[in-house]
Image (cartoon, rainbow, N blue to C red):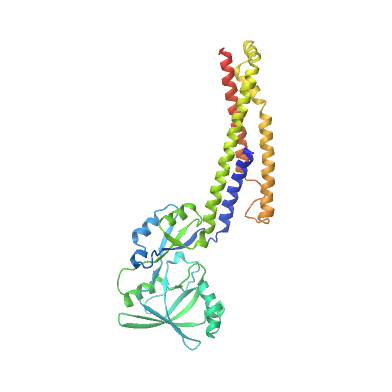
Length: 371
């Protein structure tokens, strides 16, 4: 039972690793997480909810974080309208993010001073909300993604007594960033022209990591009271809980194995005590303690091998049942035991034989000395 608990816990631990690795929607081998600071209390100073350069440097220094990029926001009023095609006008916001953190980056997403056409990357979620919620309620036309790229918007910037309008065009949609993104060059220029000239405050950042479900990353973000999309790394939080449970089962199984080895050791000592005179006679006529130790401890080798083989068969049946019935033959999980489980089984056999051999050898040397 101890060997079965130990091997099954190891196999399930490996299964969880495979499932969490395959469940992530990864691009270029990395995950990207948006993070903000939690707002505490009924009212809070906005400065406390902003990321400082020290916060960003601390994040970058962690080994489980590859890079961090701030999300730059407008420091001026932005008004959005679409002329006769979409007869509405509203206050809006724009943001920018480093190109390396974007999931879609068309060649046309660039801007230089004097350019009238402003390229925009629109959030896929925002676009769906417009088509499903906003447009039907306001009797406005609905668009496909292809048609939306043909619509021209008017983005008007206000600030410092200035006003300037730009013709905006949707050049791509983003599944990663829930925002209206403009090129960084444009937002830096516009903040200087229409903004307050204060140092840029960062309310949101994006974290680039190899594994969004890394327990170390989740624990660090929780310790800093940073807010992230819970659905983005809920698998990692569940993974931590399941791994703790499996670790407990594995430790319990190892304890049972060690207790079983102790019982076998007591049994060997009892056999040696009963056969003390016969063993002493064999030692007297010339048999070495090492040779007798190998023969006596070797009697239990078939027992250990049988126990481990039966356990491996049961563990394989449980793994196949998990693969077929629980996972519906998904390719993320193998129906066969991992090679490390076979290695662990061999180590257990070696451990049992070695412990018994050393114990028997010690007892025989004591008999040989006449103790």
